[in-house]
Length: 537
Image (cartoon, rainbow, N blue to C red; front, top):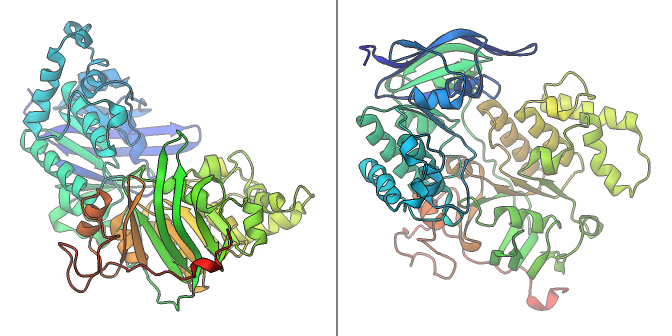
């Protein structure tokens, strides 16, 4: 083995896509046995750079050195042979196979061609699980796994293939606090055993906790690498942005109104016909941001779609001023006085038409509401330009197709269109997922401005630090059941994490009496706003 102190060296790496420069003359090093965080805004070139290291792309210029030796990586297979494995944010697993079978079916080791027929495959995988302290059942079917277990399986898989350098893309995006802590414990153990790790993430608090050094990219160029122990979140943000920034998330105090919506005993099925929400009750006030926390797949998607009139409600009522609007179409909901904006998780699939221009996307909703009558496209262009100016959207013109915009600008177009209808309710799912810090804070500002005007906002999120800073209250779902609602100003991440896993259920327990909760409790007691006899079913 080479005496080089570096597991990986990238020297003068450049990559172009047509006229777009994704990476320009980048020099980056990864030491042996270290955890390196890779930071940068959306479009800074992080993923492109890691895709070249993992063999998905080939650099246009520059060289890759592994253990001091110049190495040509032309495919993911070449990367694995060189000891490099990447765990992508979207898992690449076969749902009907067990953990062990998912690992071995992709193995290139000749002796394992028929490994799926041998019982020894479980012991081989179990050895890796044991050595690194993973929590995973090698016989468990992927379809029955939690998000955390699937991610663990992806890591075990690249370790089995012999990877000494592991690249993790947004590894904690959908994990609870407790699951993140377990992952970090495993990463530290991997580091102790000589593995080198690169983490791509937007969560600065986690960068400060887990990494040894932090490398910064900006607009496709390498800026610097700093020792984590010698920097701060503020400094890292300024290096990413190239200017001074304020990291405080505002939570304006607004006089809350009576609930704009009250949900009682809501039960909804998933696309597969299973119960996705089971007897969930809560209310949403005007001038309030109500967060929704939960492990991925706990019913968040179905809740948003049911509230927006896009999913059938099996049981329960959705009350507006005492009138049940459950089962009403979006048009009927508007006719009853609820102007609801919906910002779905799938921006370019469900939220916007990617091939259409910004202007056409802005007037789509009004066209739907106009029942097919022709609309003034010039007026639509003017409204689109107003949204671009107000939200500082970076786009060549209002005629630019939204698919050509960055993730942050796509989200601003979607939010701008939904806010333009002057809603009294906004339902938004993961509005900052995948966005850089600058775009994320722009979204928080937009939502807070709406809150100040008396709009009730349902905010489905995944970053508990953000939710605790931004939201007024947070309700927690676990496997479709409501675990409780807490005041964000009093709650802790640990408490919410326990509720997300079902270890703590406060719904039917009285204030101050729940084990592990202080007398000055964060739990919100149930409030029934309307009397039963007022409900118009």
